[in-house]
Length: 243
Image 1 (cartoon, rainbow, N blue to C red):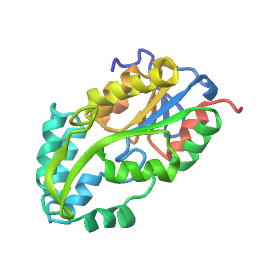
Image 2: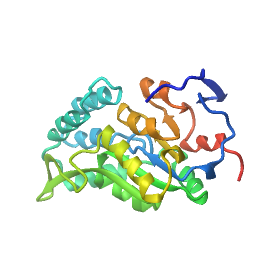
Image 3: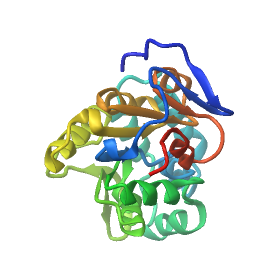
């Protein structure tokens, strides 16, 4: 993603903009795409799953390096992490969802505001269908794409399953998914908002009309048109004029 040319401006405490001039009109947009882990929700699911088999520290170190952009090959980093999850049970996944996964502040409010303004909502994640599909149903999202863990006899095998669209939802697939969704609903990429926090979100953020970094890694924050450093996801609404 090419960095915005204008110098960053603190529009409000903890809300930074560059290359845009608020107020914007939410109805000018037709799609909002969310990353899942550490953006829409409060955790990195793969790290919390790894805790069930005593490997959270090892897995979290790989996740952190990948999200900071220090590991170029997201697919390989994800395969390495998933291999360490071998033996985790479906009950462990259910526990992560029930006990540890929470929507980030303002998530539900932002989704509702976007839907009320006529936007479609896409969840596109380098995480897992077990969580993304539940969030899709819980928040009545329009589309969701993520990676599928292989489960045999109630336990993770340490492998991912190929899906109809490909093998792993990495940064390139996030971008492709956003573009295909725009085409499907009949809007230009310039009418899309993309929100993320990690390096694998940069490609989709780069083709969207409005890129939003939520409590993001420095590399992502520096290149986004909006950076939310304090408060909830719904702080994005402060940049839009009242309907």
